[in-house]
Image 1 (cartoon, one colour):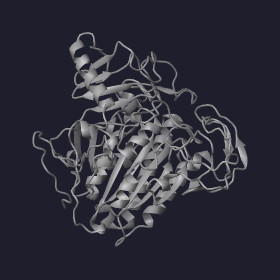
Image 2 (image 1 turned 120 degrees about the vertical axis):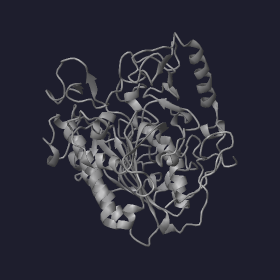
Image 3 (image 1 turned 45 degrees about the vertical axis):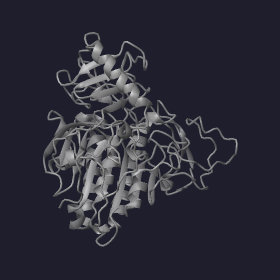
Length: 513
């Protein structure tokens, strides 16, 4: 069943990625579920890494029943900016926040007037829910008016009995349950809609890796190794509330795992031969399986008419050791694997936070029975910022010219169309270093990793780096000095796009085209 028509853009051999309003009833529109893992690497999924010893049967099944985007990227190599870009369809480096991440007490990053996937889908007739890690800031109730919320490491004085006046339900979600930031960041208290679910009863002490966690207030029911299970329970509950004859639903499920603290639940300890990290990946896979089962058991029609997306907010924090040093299998406190044991980020260079591929080249699967060919692969370069426009097309919603400025629908690519993204993709490292991907070429506007690998370098500091990913996917051979003209050309185009109002306006894909 083809739901949406497309139109051809005159000078491009490209299917315009703008949704055309249609007369479908609400029940005919597909449900949409986006599952976002936290720090899961490309090589952590068996389907993408045949040498992996971590069982991921549910993710492998999702790939087998849908399409795998083999060149998909998170908008950033760290948490907060990726989430902003995914939900708003706008690169986060266009905001005042140019580097790093927010914390558990941080002020809201999404402005009140900024549209999100959730608010857009509400206009299209969807019931919307979010379960999991928000990490985009909230306007917390403060117990004192002069509290300093810039120092997110410390409790600024939260009134845990008060009302949160800026939370996910103020950005288009009808329902929310989860945590304010990463699982290693206080406050360790669940949030439902606009209120904390309990009062903290103790001070959580700081713990070192692998159970890494910062000190802060914690409630009795907030048990670190049970948080993922609790989130899955809430997500399944949301799905079970839906059913035939009701409005279509959108569910956003940003997991807290396998991000630190690397602490799988009791049922998964010892499940793999790769110590706690491997066990945690197995638990994340099981969590995906529970959500897929809930979709199927809710009603068969929902399963057939539900678009499921799985991806990760950035690459894994696990380093790869290409020598025989001790690794995570020998000692849980070591944050890395020998390549012979596991390659969390697959073949890519670097690690989480880096501008190199390991930082942002992530798993990306779409399943929509009857619309997307099972077991197919798409090799076009895409970005998670594109999910906004994709959901809009699926829902029959026409984007406004200044909405989701950097987002392009990938739906036709998922259906097998021979098309390319109209605009190049821009990557961002943890320190704010940018890279510009155009065709096989990748220009890094900086002189290092921009993240954790040494040398870290500095953003916008020459000499820049240039790689041809078709012949050098592992970024071993920097050809910037040999390709000076290519570097200059791509630098100019990158700067023009940075200074523009958005990718869609710059590359002339808008509502009026």
